[in-house]
Image 1 (cartoon, helix red, strand yellow):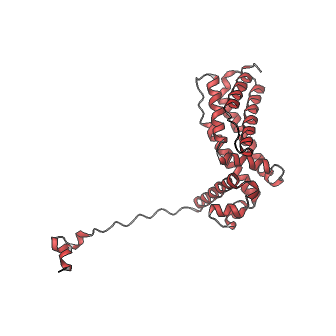
Image 2 (cartoon, rainbow, N blue to C red):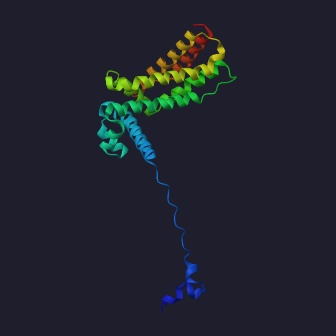
Image 3 (cartoon, rainbow, N blue to C red):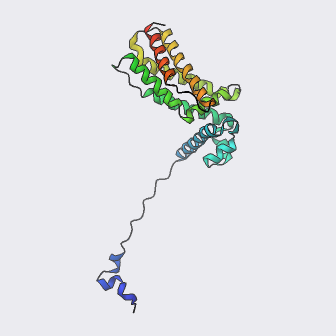
Length: 228
């Protein structure tokens, strides 16, 4: 016959207070500030914007679609960025901020010129291979005739170009090449990679870019050494 008392803690000489130790109250997480909540909201919106362009295409990227992806209301997006031009300009900034971070991590040192150029080319191309990076390029291409977008994006892009130029000079200043040669080398780098990135965006199965990247490195080395 089943006896309820048989299975009680007291039956085994255990006090009830010892059988079920009290749990310590969970520590409450510190409340986030308004600035922290706003930063998180902006980050969700920008990530959703780039993902929407990358996965659904620019023409289907509307504020309502961005809001759905971010899990936010349309009003939250308008509060943070105003309109579509504001959202997309900020999304472009996010994409190019990551490019600057890639260049900033490149080592400047005693390696020969060609290994450093190869590292630069492949690191930036790896960044361009990310869907979000190609989305940022597509936004710039699609919005290039929109005055409101350009008014917000162009000053930022000029700042980015200046930041990359300063980092470039930190990598290659010891070569003694003229300023004109440094400018030409940078232009060759980015026009080539931008073109390859757009090709990869427009063509479903683009050809392998390895040979193009190798030729690009050759061209940059020739310019910096004064052979082109």
